[in-house]
Length: 92
Image (cartoon, rainbow, N blue to C red; front, side, top):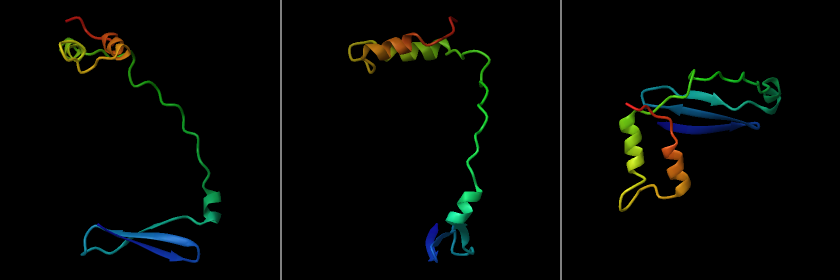
């Protein structure tokens, strides 16, 4: 990718192309006058992705718990151990 900047009268354009065979594409930075036209919008709050809390399968849960035990545990801080042990999981 080739990138170039072109300045003129307080404005700046970024030119780029992915191949030497292509023409340059231009990305323009809006001037201060143009910025006033574009106000930020408040987006609606997203809805929950799940109807209920998803549960880990029992093998995945057991793998996480195995990281917290043994002679040299990977996870050894008590608050982290409690976090992993309290994760919702299936019983089968």
